[in-house]
Length: 314
Image (cartoon, rainbow, N blue to C red; front, top):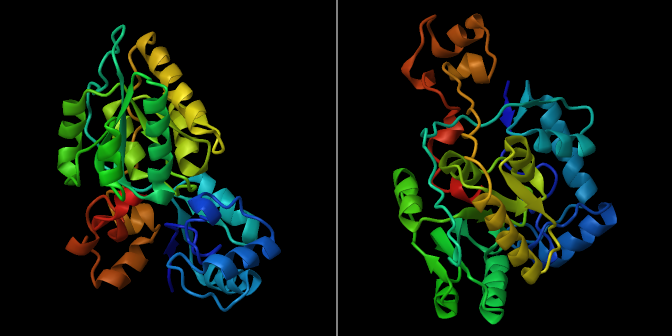
């Protein structure tokens, strides 16, 4: 018997993040469009995909139906999977997190001050590095009082350095991120991911820092921002100048607004086998070999979350 926790969209498509041509969300076309995309681009590593998308999803459906339970970290993921696998119930279970309780790291925007925008994580093309470059270039051409601070790393550090209005701190350890944010004194955050995120840990960081957030109207990131109420979602097809205008408008809104809300409560699973996986006491006893709580199944997080050096991509 097995349970399945969804992390990306591998069951739907070999490209796993639903990124198509132009390194942007594909829009989930019909089967013909999917087959055309896969023939051109291959899987997420560029490798040839031998099967049609119909065969791929039929095989995924069998595996999903064979699971005791399927978990997804957001309602957006659950709804997206339901379009392809309507006979498989997906349980929404947010990832477990432990976030600090902060008074807020957003700097007040003073009259005439340059707007400082925070971006967090590892920015590659599908996570918004190309979009950020276009925005920074437009800001420079139009001489906007706007600069971007990447708390993390990018796939084009040298190009950003030449622009002069993008500052990249470099990779960070998880415990360092809030000190780095505090040091940059940003006014708001921009999360420019081009794919429908299944959860987005970097958004959780922004929420804990109580930064007003701008993101594309896509995936779990948009769902979570709207539920929180301290941010705005923007169209995925906006041109760079329109995105910058949205960022400037957001900064003005924040400057005139009251104290931001605290981050939403995070999910906690004190006994992961019983509170996340819904094992009965008898099932847990059979698995662990005793009726007592064993070390390897204590703690507040599903095992897969424990080692997430790469998870800032998500």
